[in-house]
Image: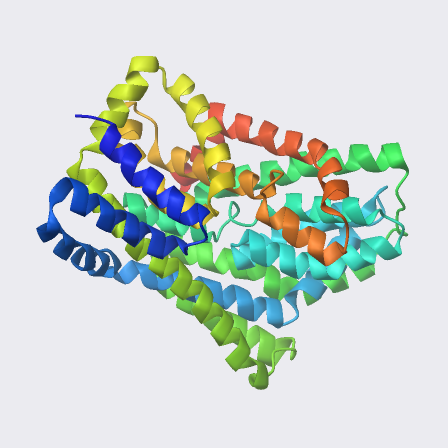
Length: 430
C-alpha cells in the first residue's frame, strides 16, 4: 500500500479547482486522469456507473426540501419577526444590536441550516440597522459573519444531513448532537460581543415591557416552532428525514402565505429556481464524490491513513487535534460541502479504529468547516458580510480576532468534552 495514488488523485482535483474548474467537474476529470494512469481505459466505464449508484438513495431527497424550506421561510417574513423578538429580549444590554445579531442567527439556524443563507438574511436586515445606530460597519459585518457559523450546527443542518448519508449515521442523532454545541458557540460569541460592547461603549436600546416582549414572542412563535417540529418528528420516528423536509416546506408555505401573509405566489418561481439551483449543485458534488469514494476504496486509502496516523500517535485526542488543524485549513481551500464529501469517506476507517464516536466526529467536522468559512483571508461568509456592509475587507478582518478566538474555544470544548454533543442524543435516542 502506498499513499502516492491518493496524493495524486487529490492533487489533480485541487489543481483543477485552483484553475477555476467547477468542483464536480474537477472531481470527474481527476477521476478520469487517475483511471487512465493507474487502472486502464476499461475502468472509465465505472465513472458514470458510480455517479448513478451514489445518487440512488431515497434519503438524499431531504436535501432539496430543507433548502427550499429555508428559502420559503426567509421570503415569508421570518427574519423581520425574529429581529423584533430578539431585540425585545436582549436589545437593552450594552451593544444590544450586536447581541441581537447573534441571537437571531441562533434562532434562524433552526430554519435555514445554511451559513450563507443566514449571512444573507440576517445581514441584510441588521447590518444597515447597526450602522444607523453608530456601530462601525466593519464590526457589524464581522459579528454577522461570525454568528452565521451557528447556522449549520444547530439543527436542522444540511451539512449534518450530508455527513449522515455518507457515514450511514442517524440523522436524528446528528441533529440532537449539534444542539448543545450550537448553543455553546452562540454563548461564546455573545460573551465576546458583550466584552467588546462594554469596552467601546456601544449603544443600548430601551428595555422592552413584558407585554411587548410577549407580543413579539407570539408573533415570532410560528417561526420558533419550526425546528422543534422537524427534530421531534425525526427523533420520535414519526417521519423520515425526507418526510421531515416535505413537512418543513408545507409548514413554511402555510406560515408565509396564510399566517404572515408576506409570501406571495408570484415569488414562488424565483424561490423555487434558487432552491433548485442550490440543490442541483450539492447533488452534482455528491455524484462526483461517489467516484472519489469508489477509487479511494479501491486503493484502500482508509488503511493507508490508519497506518499513517497511528504511526504518529495512537491517542484519539492527539489525532483529533491533528484533524482539527487539517479541517480548518481544508475548509479554507474548499467550500464546506465539497470539503466534507471528499474527505469523510477516507477518514471513517481511522475514526472507527480509534474508537471515536462517529456522531461526535460529525459535529467536530461541521464546526471546523463552518469556522473556516469565517477565517481570513478566504472565508466566504466574511466576504459576503463585507459586501452587504459596503466596507473594506481589511477593516472587517481587523474585527475578527475576538470572534475567532470565541469560535476556537467552543471547538476545543466540543472536541475534548464529547458529552457536549453526545449527551442529548444518548438521552433521547439511546
